[in-house]
Image (cartoon, rainbow, N blue to C red; front, side):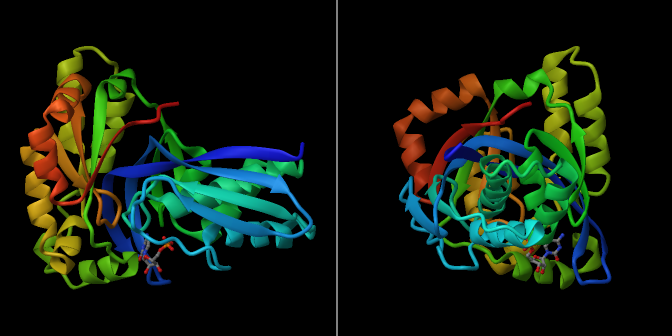
Length: 306
Ligand code: C5P
């Protein structure tokens, strides 16, 4: 095999609870990740030397650097060290996932590079080894290897696969990507500074959501309502303390007619869920759509189920 193309799926956190501080300063999480159909595409071709070219598929305006600190190149050099082999590769990354918005695009790209190189060079590294390399690259990279639906603990890298029930197919995910980005470490720092009473609005939500996802699918309307009730993100008040205009974006997305509005990871992207028929109707309402677009870029996608 000389070439391979791998999709790198965006993710949202359906729940994100901060349960503790870890000795290394990281925050211990209990979170449920969900992959989206929105994806970057990473084309890989064997080559004498390694290079990375990035094209912006959606004109997002967010700049992604193609230097050595890009997660694709970091994943590549980690794999070269791990295997003690030269794995020359011409990477072409087509970005569709807005960068810096909490959608895990960079992490998904790194996971795609690990998976792709493993196949391209027939390295036959088992999942466990790829997983530990992924986890060393960043908290969300390990989920990028799995996709689907999974509960993450530790820094988010200890993963338990969850079923992706059929009712999730009926939902459309509406993303609102504000013009301002938010830095992940600063959002976690802002969380540290929150008054205790505002710190844990999501308490218990990951466990409840796990129960809803593993329950039988009788009574679909009820289960969607139950599902939406569990969704929550402890980082929202921290993100809002750094970027007060997030609340205006939140309100605009709620008024667009969505059932639930949440922060993606540490932000700044917000996502909302709506039943697909309703979302399509709203999408055709150009006036309402233009009103929402005043607050940022709007994308419609779906959950990617396994
Ligand atoms: O692992 P990642 O590179 O995504 O994390 C970026 C930063 O976000 C970390 O350096 C840390 O400051 C913060 N973080 C955290 N707890 C987590 C994940 C990230 O404190 N579980």
